[in-house]
Image (cartoon, rainbow, N blue to C red; front, side):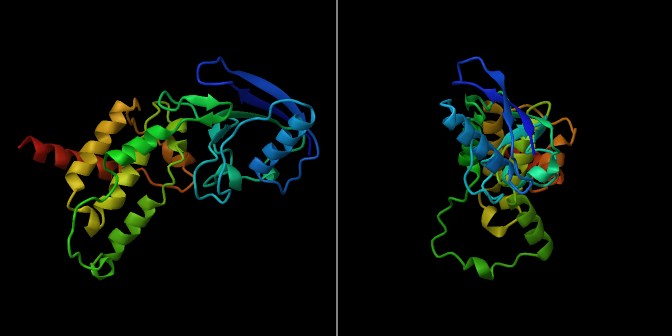
Length: 249
């Protein structure tokens, strides 16, 4: 398979970026998208050129690190798939592929295809944890949890924090990400003691990071590699309003 690649190159956050064209031949349809980029980098190194910087870690669709916008779609054309799980059989011989980093005001480009997504970490640090001193706590396995709530909590916990929802949203909203993290704890007994403080803190941090608001366009759900539902945004809104009203009393 022969491909024409247009790849975003940017030296650092302060430099002006540009699209760089590359021709790549001998690409196997069984390669993952990241393996294809590995082949390109081997070619660039052989030619004495600087390889393309991109993020990767597990290459198993777990870590959310391999965040690329491929032909305008975060993680590429295949639904419910991360870049490392996307295979070249989804493309055709002679295709032109445009590869860019995730773009958002809160995701400044570090270099080439690598975006700084530490804003998501700061949102989690603001309240997405359980810190109450429980002393002699009851065994978690002995706490009664209904199957409905357990299933919903697991659906929310499926979020890998890749940021595709933000890159796809025209408002660069992080509502789906924050909603998944808030709901994950709010649905379980262990998350109840800090439930109200948690949602207030995380939403406040979300605003401070410069993310946009949700206007129900549903692009976030469409590109989420773990198919996290927008219903969690409604859940978070209810959580936030309840906590805010209680805080105002």
